[in-house]
Every structure is written in structure tokens, then in C-alpha cells.
Length: 337
Image 1 (cartoon, rainbow, N blue to C red):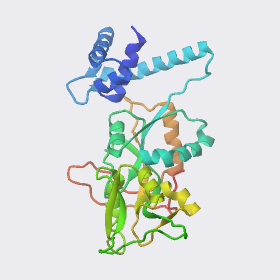
Image 2 (image 1 turned 180 degrees about the vertical axis):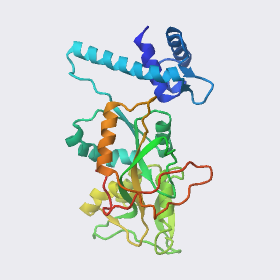
Image 3 (image 1 turned 30 degrees about the vertical axis):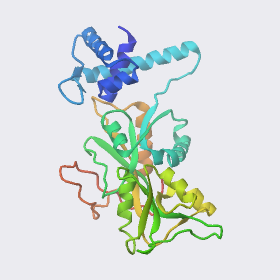
Image 4 (image 1 turned 135 degrees about the vertical axis):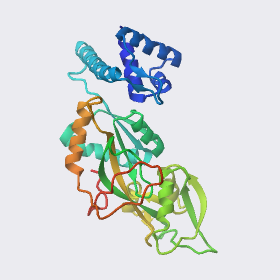
């Protein structure tokens, strides 16, 4: 048996997609399928349940998956030892998160873990909120970090997934600053003189959050949309150049706010979002990998808090899976560490 078959099988088990696994293994899908069939012929038992979508592992496949990972880890360590490259091989923890969190929160968060975990070997998968949630559900990552708000909850089966609240962040309107040190724009604006508005695309999670935030203030702002973008970083640059007002997560704007290049606009148009971590709950069939389990236990010690049952979130839409109740509000406005 070729160890490439084991690598193919592990890729398929973790992606639950023949096409995606074939792409990862840099082979055509027909060739990839033939290699999986050859492995099943070698083991003498079906490993993949092909009648379901996405394809799942049979009971024998679940057991073989754990053994295959162990064999590949041992082979990797032996090769590294023979080459004198490393003393101990460590699996990368695969973390999926949206663009904004990957750029402005993840580096600081990773640094905060170093005193407790040492240097973590990580593999980032960055995309929009829909993508990163699907990666977790399909087995393409070990942990998901994303925003959450009761009116736009991340719908995950709480019997299958663990969840921790890592911190909170506000989404608030910002304006650039003129040469006189004053804000270039102010809210709410007037109907005959609307404020230039830099908005998110309708498919962006922060775009939906912005629409909710606009209802929170003293009155509905008078805005004229002049630009639309998918990412907060693009709007951030436009605000700095004085093109209009945009709603930005505080983590994106904090350095420019401190230096006086941006101004947070008062008036109550703001929204608090949670920053949550999710992982698939370990089971006998799918045990947690050692390093990932160590990380999650550390996060539980740092962030576990009792739920406030007196505060119930907005009900999810019909047919949605039950989401976790919102944890009690922390006294700090942001704590991603």
C-alpha cells in the first residue's frame, strides 16, 4: 500500500468532498476516486458512505481515519528525524475566520497565547462568514472564529459544536478629520444634504450589522450611498481619505482613532457584536487532536462564563437550528485576548 492512499483518505475524511480533496491532493477527481477505491480494496471493507451527501465515513472508515492519521504522523516524524530537521513534528491547528478578524485580531490573539502554549503551528483559512462556517461543518478546519449577534446568529447545532465567547467588539460610524482637526462629516445629516455613505455589499455580514446599527441611534441618518465594498479594510481607507462615513469595527479603526486621523461619530448608532470560537465537539469516533484540545482547554479556562438566562436572544428564523444563548455581558468593551 502507498502512503499516498492514506493522505488521500485523510483529505477526503476532513473535507467530505471528492472534488475538494482531489484539488488538495493535486490530482484529477477520477484518479482520486480510483485511489480511494484501491485503498478500500486493500482494507477489504467500504470506508466511504457514498449514498449520502456530502459523503461520510462508514463505521470502519471512522476507525481507519484515526489509524491513518497516526501512521502519517509517525512517518512524518521519522522522516524529520532522519533528515535532522526537527525534533518533534506538530500538527497545524486549522483556524477559519473572516477577513477582518484575520487581519486585526488574530495576530494579537495568537501573541496572547504564546506564554501558555508556546509557538503554535497554525494554518489560516480566510473567507466570508458563509465560507468559514461551511468549512467548520464540512471538516475543513479545527476551529472557527467569527462575529455573532442575536439578530444575525451563526446557526450551528449546539449538540455537535462547542462554543466560547472570546470577546466583544463595537461597530460604530467613523469620519475622517480635516486639516483643522475637526470631523469632516457628522450625523444624522439632512434630507436636502445627506451624508456621503460608504457601505458594505448586501452579502457581507458587516453590511447586515450596519443596517441594524442604523436603527439604534436617536434618529434615522440621512445618507447617500456613494461606494460599496465587501471588506471593512477597503472602507477604512476611503474614510481616511475623506470620502464619507462608514461603520467600522473598533479594532479596524483603533490606531487611527488614537492618532487623531479618525473620529467616532456620536449619536447612538452603534452595535456590539460577540467574537466567538466554535469547534466540533470531540467524540469516540472523532477524537480531538492533541494540540487543538490543549488550545480549547486553555480558552475554556480564560473565557468560560455562566449564561445569563434572564436575557434571551431574538428568536432564530423558522427551521433554523437552535443557537446558544447569549453569554452575560462583560464589563470590558472588548477582550479578544
